[in-house]
Image (tube, rainbow, N blue to C red; front, top):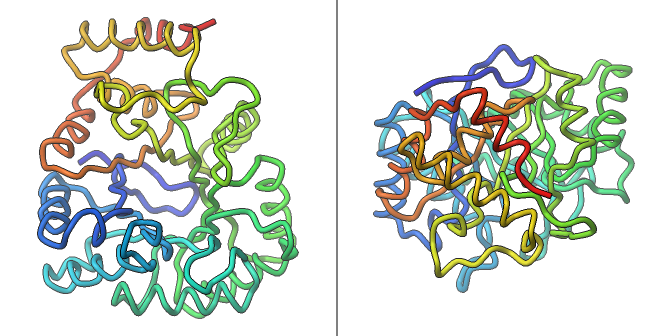
Length: 315
């Protein structure tokens, strides 16, 4: 699989990151192992999870995804080849939504145990905590790096100005800085004023920020395929996207997909990867066929003219 740089870490990661949100809950162990094996067989090495996954599924409590990944890593002996990302900050069970220092450190220890690893490669602040001073949260993350429990840190669901404030604080104090941000992003654009609370969608400010820090800061995207809404009639578009702008962009997307002999999903992934700034998409799948389709996007290359048409489509 192709690899791309992760911010200014000096590490290269897989060009498509496999999201493990529902492994161990909606996807049983056998299915989850099969999908993980398929991803690795394709050369993938970048796995994404979180401490809260997936507490909202009936019967879920949180921690199921990390626990399953830990069993798979042990069963396959793959720890050395995999780059593991997990997250802290959102609430689950009796754990509040917070990035208080003591909570960050306690949750990190839980994640390490569930994953069965000595170090987390990438540890995200999963949501911006406006109650805890940013300085305190960053200092706690820095302690985890100093202790060897975490290699790199990232942010998720942060606004651009908060990322810049965090960068300035880390630089001033000699702490490790966020190397990336993971945000909701897809080809379609939500209508003005729409919200995905508590998730944050990528906006022009964030794109400008990442573009200005090209080569030292990476944008990763989640919810890129809108749970199948691009291709499945039983999956309507989320209400936030409905409207004439999406209609025009869907028409352009389908036209380009027909030209290159790819699915609309594959074109969305290719468009993200070829955009400015380039985006590292997270993919998810519940069947081997879905995963194969997503991985096939790596074989899709869009021309400059096709990228222009996709970029300019809409009202």
